[in-house]
Length: 339
Image 1: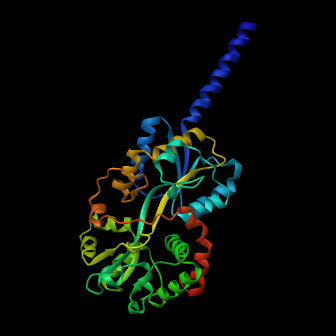
Image 2 (image 1 turned 90 degrees about the vertical axis):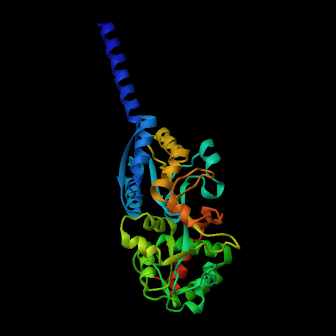
């Protein structure tokens, strides 16, 4: 009887141990990245580690609200999203856990990480202009967008969109609030129409002659260059790209990144996943699959569209600064009517 009880207890212990091991082979990912090419990224991680990824996708604000409502009961291990201001929002909500990793600290440059979230890819915010309407010397810097010579020529997406807020935050960091507000007021005065649509809409509006200049993230341009639609490739022939502020601090870049949740039930798997995203192979997925630049330096990529866009000097402003000035950026845009 005693031996039977011992055997049963051992069996029960092994059962629980096996269940725990099985649970450790899972990663619960909340992602606001909606790119089909990421499927290969996740599949390769599972192939390498045996850790299955259970993914919930949604819009950034929806996922942040879900995480806040779930609280300590949240099953999420890692939160991925685009834009530094959204990552900062997660930090401000106290969602991320501090992460110490020699791998991440060695591979991700210091200006592209904080104590609890890391950038894994970057995209630049560039000036797009119509070749037949403007000359490149008119658009060397972001500040040139406020020049009255561009009155009625600028198309833009909403000033409340994080891409524009992050650019404005960087402008505040470099020039101060007063100069940033003067610049924003000048840009608004140059609008060809009220802000609407996304970055692709602005690019196509410039190509169609609806306006002469716009701002856009580079991966939208690369998508159009690689498009299987002839009309989109023809539209790209009508525009040119300026890398702003090459003679000073460099072109503003934004990021896609993520962090481990403070309440993550699978912290070891979460860390492995984040370190994997900084690997050579994963960094190439970001570039070759989704037209983003690797956050890790000296990664060899094979993307003709990115090569066509050319090389540039990137602003090395710490991503934490974009978070610091995010609220002030929105306040300035509200005051000048950039909506």
